Length: 173
Image 1: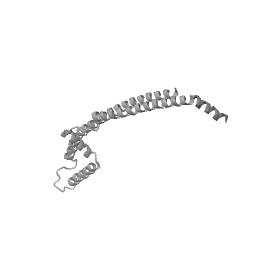
Image 2 (image 1 turned 135 degrees about the vertical axis):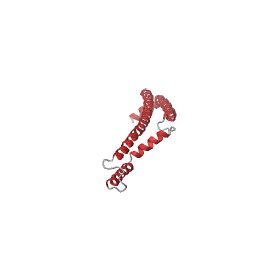
Image 3 (image 1 turned 90 degrees about the vertical axis):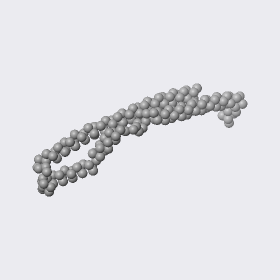
Image 4 (image 1 turned 30 degrees about the vertical axis):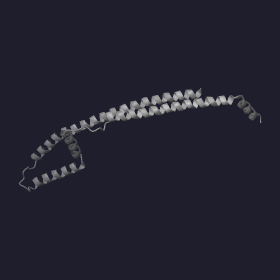
């Protein structure tokens, strides 16, 4: 009964009311800080959306006919369909010349076939390199975008940490 008597005396003296008012004031200040953090979050979302619209790596640009062709040929020449089809073509060419089904137009060392294969390789190599250069360019743009997003996120995290530190200092008072 002595403990409750002490609380009654503190309540009557107004000391508990004073403490409660101070706590309520601190809670209101913390709520204001939380609202500021929410506002910062909303603003950063808006900035992020604007940044995406400006530098988004998947933003499509008009491709030239040469770029479209290079991408198509690279995709097609790098497929299993092309490889297996080419083996079938080579097999038919060699069989037709070895067994002389059609007047043996390219006898055994297959010089004409070697010429065709050399021309194919000479044409395919630069086309594939063009496509790889375009892919490297897309990768650079994507890496730059990721870097900018990471820098922005880092700044946001620092700002949030400052706000949290400020809230923590207010609570400790």
